[in-house]
Image 1 (tube, one colour):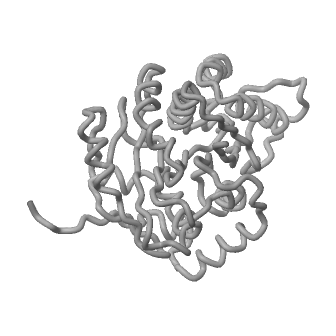
Image 2 (image 1 turned 180 degrees about the vertical axis):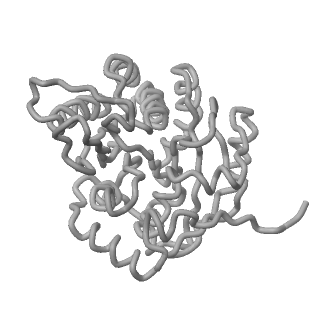
Image 3 (image 1 turned 30 degrees about the vertical axis):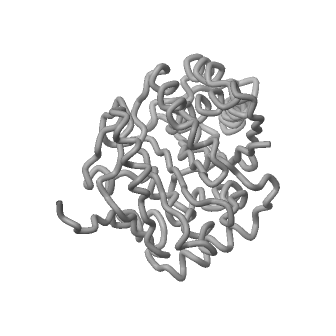
Length: 297
């Protein structure tokens, strides 16, 4: 066994967000200063994973609910955009680099997850190509900076899971969600609308296309707030809304459902919604973003 530390580079720095630590820090501080900490401490958040110029301001509303003084482990569940995956995968890395500071993977939790036989190991190349987890690393580093040597991360790449598998992973992860020292970050954008996304659902009763998209997204957001995995699955089947993190969201909803059986009370609230641009005709395209937080009573 070699003791060489495997590092995942910040491969999207310099394109999707600033590679300059000081510039990135200032941007994140600016966005966070505009958000209210209304429902702390979050046990889980849903936040977008687009380039920060598009979704940095929206994501701040979720990260503002994080309490670094109690958080010791940050699980980050992101969808797989580039490789076909029917299960969930763990990273081969020990350390994830960010322009702010390096984040350490919790190898003990990884060993426990690996033992279940439910996880694959992704290659470093797959890990560095994927942006859905990486886009949460600078925000995690920023939110946790006052306790930066006291926490670890647990990145999980989530495949195109069946309903049964969403239940299985939800059940497995529910014991971690039950622990107040853990934070779950669920990485997802909302509707990808336009011909380039092959999705052009339009309800003309809503008026302009961008209003129809918002109505569709808010319907889904309302269902997520009900914390009912079956209703969310049915919504996706009916409208086919292109919510790219639907499987990570499904895993979270199933984990919550498992904990509610034992009488744990939880609430989820969305705090912000945004669109990359306002679609008004059929040539337009946009991606929607939503930020929200789960609290345990």
